[in-house]
Image (cartoon, rainbow, N blue to C red; front, side):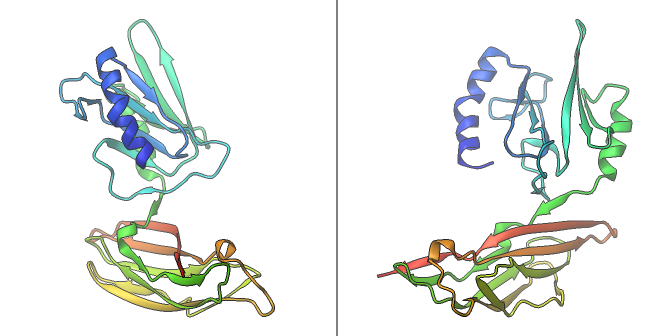
Length: 245
């Protein structure tokens, strides 16, 4: 879901189109994903194209997914799962199965089990990524291998069409003292912003090289729509450091 994925779509997708690839199984992102049928760099509307299924997630915690699906994705969830493929001379049927042994997605959508699987998927709770566009950070200045810590600012902007309630939770460390992080939640209307002044300081008697000072925090947020539906976000961010001559 970054540079390498972009390159894959640029260089491999045309080969898949040329060869008529039916399905591609992805890995590494540790999230459940099912794409639209894709062909020629766009969503296919005539039933041709390649289906992409990802990613398999069983032996480690699932990663968060984006609240608003990317254009090429039909569905995604932050869920432990694996894929089962039933192959016959008539068809191939793809089933996503979660850790509770529930089938929560079936493709093709014309399969008689699709409706029941969709009901399971819609009942699942996902944890979403808080968009990077909603977080603006003031970098720390460091000199060579010296880092003294100090104050910095975190600006949170609500990028959604619904209000959010959030907290900023610093990542704990025996080598760092954090100040300015409040356990009291903050509320933001759509498009509104709030600036937080916080501090990361080396613990007394502790010397930390800049590259080892984990000035990190989590944005933990809840979005509530006008219909009363909620979505949970939990994403870690790192305050950057800029080396000064």
